[in-house]
Length: 566
View 1 (spheres, rainbow, N blue to C red):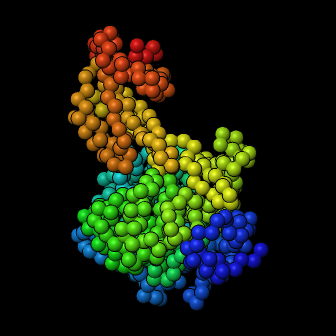
View 2: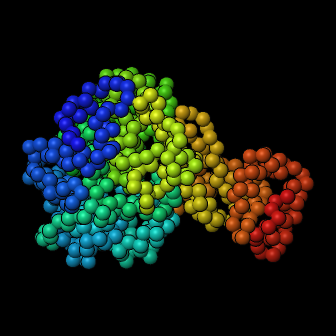
View 3: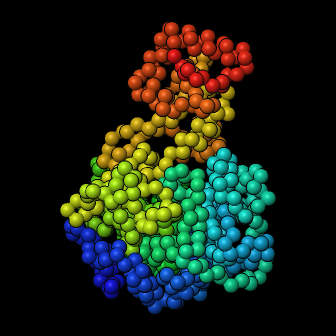
C-alpha cells in the first residue's frame, strides 16, 4: 500500500494530541516491507543514495559512514570535565575505521566473525563499530565493568575476536589472547561487506531479555529497518542535527541509537551523567533535535534550575518510574511546556524502538503504541502463546520464534495504547541478575548464603525494589561493615548498577536443596515474618549457635541442610 512520507512527517511535526492511532501507523504494522521502501526513498532526499535495499541486502558501512565522508558533518560530539568538547567528523570516522578494518582483516577478522567491542561509549567504540561493520562481522557490545560480569558473558558468546582499549586487557583473563590490535598504519584496502537480510549483524546482551547473560541475535534487516524508522520518524533527525540521551543504559540502547543517528548524517552527542551532575551547562550549548531524559537527569536539572532552550523534542523511557509531580515541575522550570514530548522504549536487540507514542505538546502521558513498521501481536498474559482475549496483553514482536519472552503489558483504551508495566519484577524494565549476584557473593566468607527478593513499591509503572536477604549463620552481623563488603564485591565483579536496593541481615542458616539455596523457602520465610522472629527468638538462636558449632567443627560452614533452619 502507498505511504505518503511527507504527510507523515508533517503530522509528526505538529505535536498534536489527537486521540487514537493514525491510519498510516496501523497500515505500517500490516505492511512493514512497503513502509520501509517508502521511508528509504524519502530519507535520501538530496543526499548520496543508499546502497541497501529493504528485504534484499544491507551495506551498513556505506549507508552509515561512507556516504557522509565527503561532508563536514560531525558524527560524534563528546564532552568531559578533563578535555572539554571533542568531535569526530564523518570524514575522520571513515578514514580511521577503514584503517582499523584493514588492520583487523590482516589479523583474521572475516565476514560473520564474532567480534566483541569492549568499550565505554565514545570515539573508540564508534570507530571499532564502523570497522567491524565494514568487515561484515557479527558484533557484540559490552561495557568494561566487572570481571565476573564480563567473564560470564564472554563465555556465553565465545567470541573469535575482542576489541578493547589496551588498559582493559586486565579484565579479560583467559580471553586476553583474543584481543585485536587496532592502531596499525595499514593503508585502507577493503570492500565493505553487504549483509543479507537474515544475516546476524549482532549478538547483543539485552538487559531486557531473560536471562540477560544469553546473547540475542540481531538480524541485518531488523537493525537497518529500526535505524531507518528511528532516524526519520522516532527522533526526526536531519543531517547535522544532534541526538543526546545521557544516562540511557548502553546495553539496552546501543548500537540502535548510533545506527539511527549515523544513517541520517546526524550527530550523536555523548555526555556522562557524572559530569552533568557537577556541571549541566554542556547540555545547553548545542541545539538538540531530540533529547532523552532519565529521572536522574531530570532531578539534576531541577536542582540546578537549568533552562533548556535549544531542545526540539524530548523523550523518556516509559518503563522508568513515573513521578507526575516532578516531571510537570521539570517541564515548567526548563521551559519545555511548548516542546513536543514522547515515550520511547528502545530494545537494541530488536533493532531500535519497539514502543513509541506520538509526539505531544502538553502533559506527561502513558501512551506507548507499537513502533511504526513493526509486526506485532497482543498475546495472553499467561504466556500460553495465544492471542489475548481482551484489550490487555503482552506486547509481542512477530515473528516471535527465537526472540526473548515478551514482558511488556500493553492496554488498548479507546483507540490508544497505554504502557501497563511488566509481567514480572524488573528494574526499569531491565532484568535484575539475581542469580549472578548470589553466585558472586558465595565468595564472601562472612555469608552463609543469600537470596534476592523483589517487592512492589507502587506507582503507575509497577516498579519493584530488590532486597538482598543475607544469612550470616551463627555469627551476629555487623550490618554496616558487612554491607560495605557486599557492595565492594558486587561493584568489583558486576558493576554498581547491580547493587540491591535494600539489605536485610539474618543470623540464621538458609535452607538448601541439592547444594543450592532454596529461594522459595527464603522468600516464604521473609514474607511471613519468620526470619525476623527467628533472629530474636532465644530458642531459634540457641539452635543456630549449636548448628554453627557443629558445622565449624566439621570444617563445613556451608554444608547442605535438607531440613532447613528450624
